Image (tube, rainbow, N blue to C red):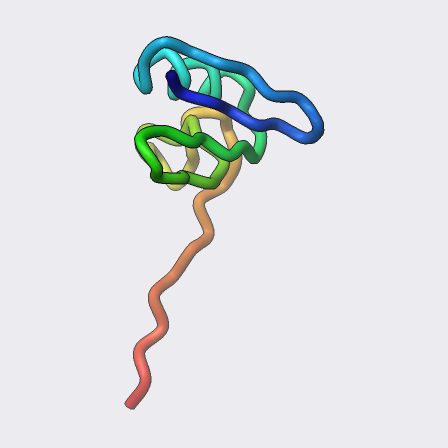
Length: 67
């Protein structure tokens, strides 16, 4: 059983694939718990094209190097 927590709600899924698909559709910060592990985050950005995420948000992260 895989548990997904969003705000004060808890949802249960049979597989991790189902939980991830639901979290991607939601597009908000969630906590996914399975097999004694916990994954936190906002899921749904599968790739970047033309400097944007699939949802249209700009990709602005830049790696900073120290000299």
